[in-house]
Length: 600
Image (cartoon, rainbow, N blue to C red; front, side, top):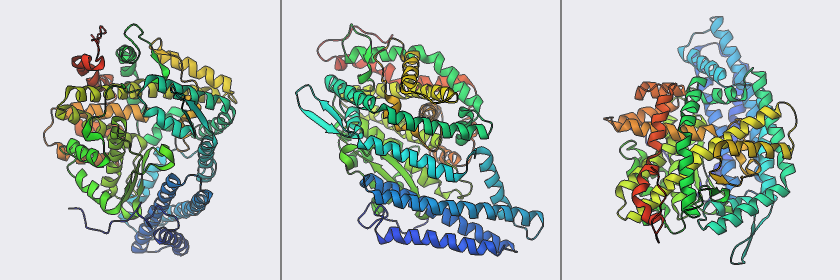
């Protein structure tokens, strides 16, 4: 039974997302007091186990407050990205966090000396130090945190500042004009189904980034150079460095890669089919602008057209595996942890971040009444639910990586997909759901792996020196052809400037986690078909995501060895469900006349 506690207010007026609120100021003061107290107490060097254990408890609570303040700053940036005071506040918190980091290292060093010298004995202190060492061995530390926080983070902020300062102009087929930031225009691209309109938007974005490519090139060179330095100082390749952050072995990653390329002919066949549906039956090449597009004549199912109804559908979809998801949603409502307001004209996107000092999660979903946003909502709530559930794991043991959050987020999407297919009454609704499934396949299993390969090539070339815009563009074209061959017409030439994934300050790779998370979700879905007691299995997997190496999660609960390619081929087969099922709905894809194109 989860303990009853006060639900912290996040997005409410005077909640933590308001950096001028008393709630936020109190948290910051508590954080500063914690650092001051830690400095004083650690200087006395505890001589008994109880004092040492209390010092650990104080340190962990102060670390939770640091994470809480960073989440508050992120929420405030979402509401008012142009407010320079928010950036200043974030820098202030980061500077104090560096002091906390130094105090933590001093405490660890002294505790080890104290245990070695038998000044005191404590199983709690011993286990705490073991966990710290374990984390250190799995998390490369090539540069100090000061470089991470005060160089890479500002570069990431600079990227968004430069991107936000641009104005992209789109002239639509009807002669109307839209002028806004690239983020707003990109949001429009994601949520536009009309082919000609999408092409105009896509081309306008490409022109905008082409005209300003030099500055993004400079930022990308700086970010990639810092990550290369991290990896080299730990005698790791960039990929090994990224896998270490995810606590996943190279053998499992290689197994995914082999299985993936063996299945690539089927994936290219799917892209050709999508192209025939969106353009015409004789043209099998999909225009780059239409990659991931919806069919314009297929509307969103009625029960996904509001945020609240989508929540209700999602609760039903995951109930058999995660019955306490409803409890999480109830806490979200009490504390207004979820914000759905359309900030910045639709540039906000979706994200979640922890408020560990109150065991809460801040969630932002820029909701629109379409199937794409419904699935994105499912994803981000799955991620948030994982974080909320694993607050029960001791803080010093709890290590959630991006891959684990992607795994559970995409599991929620897959459960929603299958639930919608089961419950849909109208065949046109089923067709709409299956088409969205094809869109997700194209993105997760072709477009994102392309991005991963491009990042790999950028790092390989960057290790030899500065990369020019022309060189990056050449790498983009080469990688694009390698993946898509003749299935797509044109190239998303400036994807490296448009996508923030290439500038991530925390990890050098921000793509493979999506694909492996997607396939992991489908692997679990396939395994659940033969499982009894899925409620306990779901709970156990969530906890394991916070504790174990990635391979161990599947070995322990599914008896699956993910270092074998056959396991991943099974996952890909499960993921291809929409490709198999859509055969029965061809008349709804081509409402005027049935297509002669076959998936067989």
